[in-house]
Image (tube, rainbow, N blue to C red; front, side):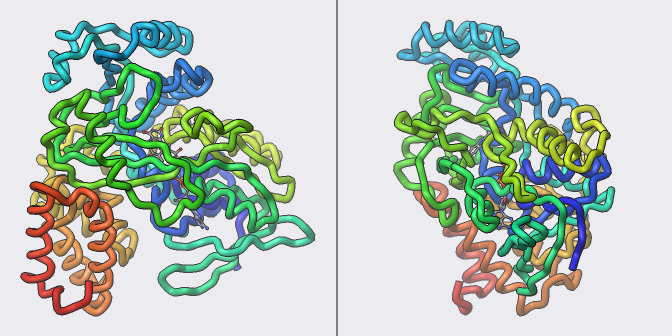
Length: 503
Ligand SMILES: Cc1cc2nc3c(=O)[nH]c(=O)nc-3n(C[C@H](O)[C@H](O)[C@H](O)COP(=O)(O)OP(=O)(O)OC[C@H]3O[C@@H](n4cnc5c(N)ncnc54)[C@H](O)[C@@H]3O)c2cc1C
């Protein structure tokens, strides 16, 4: 039996952020994640470090939180935030009234704006729709959610935090009506481990209701699915938003070498087994092309879907987009707290508020320092732009994202992983235009060379990865991407002989 003071369930931005805050305040804790870090909404999000512009008209409180946290994260997370800035573009049909409300509200919520004429905006982003009327510049940025979670975890591990990935909470242990621990399934060994704790924090996002139910509690959630598509080029160096009330497909975020466009908002009942519908892809592509017409011709390399863990509103008649993006902490009065809602942008604030509650519970007076102390572990990252990595590379394993063999080897040795996805999340291997077509087998070879996986295990490891990869690319298989997929299929099925094994 493992003993700790605080058990955190969920390794997304919220859970890892809480682990970091607990570590900096000296609170003994343990974090349990059923997959890898950022496996839920965090890794399936747009990667937009909101300025707050998106929310300012409808939800000024959320906008204020965004701009405050945006400023903090730029300062403490220089190697995972690319300060791209953003434009809200007004196209024919987008009303001047909304533009005026937007500017007024930005002023009230403290979001700096600069109005640009169409030609000024095109000078900044030459492939913008030439019929745009004007644009408003805001301090949006691009953030890497995987890197963010890993860096949060480093602070925890350096101070003795116990971190379990690929471990799933299957039971909340209760003693005389109070939550006193969890039973956890090790996904690789199939063993059940028991961990006892004085406080349990449910930071499991869209799975929050299920975890609360295990403790005999209830959390009112509304699950909203959102899908995104990835284009194989960086089409703009700035985030591009549409200057109109929030709707489908109105944000494009540059992310290293690619562009992410989305999203949608569709109510779902189950956060698992999600798929991107072809209709969503068409909708996002055509909306993105209104802002950047190149989206009509560009090769799309992947689609993915995540679920927003929104708090249920009393009245949901106007759809999930109208539900507040604010967050809430629920004290279930049985030793468990749930922290729900919010955004990636506000994860640090959520973690601060949650840790304050736990610190009060234990009578700990140490204040929060996460807004001032830079994220630890950044010294090992190259940062932006991607070309910075070139200087340090001797032996490239992933050409798209410039990931070196030594970097991959270090991750394999540090984590002892048997999962290619874990390497991907820590290095960006396979996240670029070829989507792992050329680098996956190299990484697998290295995993074998270092004794991490046996030849028998390696085939299963590869199959799992390729199937996950195929799930993301399948809805987009036409034109050039279909040709690319056939090439990859040729490499794996013919050249590497996988056709003899059932894939
Ligand atoms: C499509 C989409 C786009 C978005 N875009 C943005 C954006 O651009 N900017 C922004 O600020 N916000 C964005 N958001 C919102 C943001 O992604 C989420 O609010 C935030 O990531 C939630 O983080 P979390 O840690 O609370 O939840 P999650 O990231 O979902 O983490 C919960 C974790 O709990 C784990 N878990 C669940 N059950 C168990 C169990 N039984 N045992 C152990 N672990 C378990 C899951 O595997 C998961 O990793 C977006 C959301 C979506 C869906």
